[in-house]
Image 1 (cartoon, rainbow, N blue to C red):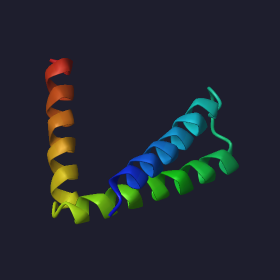
Image 2 (image 1 turned 90 degrees about the vertical axis):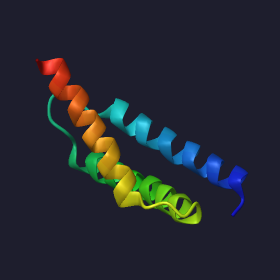
Image 3 (image 1 turned 180 degrees about the horizontal axis):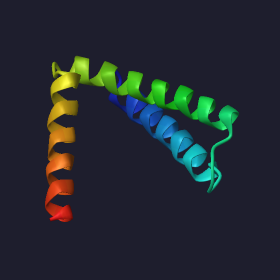
Image 4 (image 1 turned 120 degrees about the vertical axis):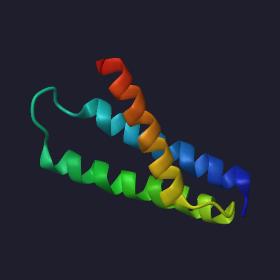
Length: 79
């Protein structure tokens, strides 16, 4: 795996996602923009999954740990 190419691809996809999120209307969402955002998120997630697999890690474990950590932060902030 070429780490530089993967890093660049991740950056490009994340940038595209960020631009589409910023373009979302304040109230409601345009279906076309939401669909395009879903496509870009899918491409970004697939790149992350490829790299996670390359590193010998488990994407489900990473997601669970991160979501659990974020949930715990949210619970503490709400108290």
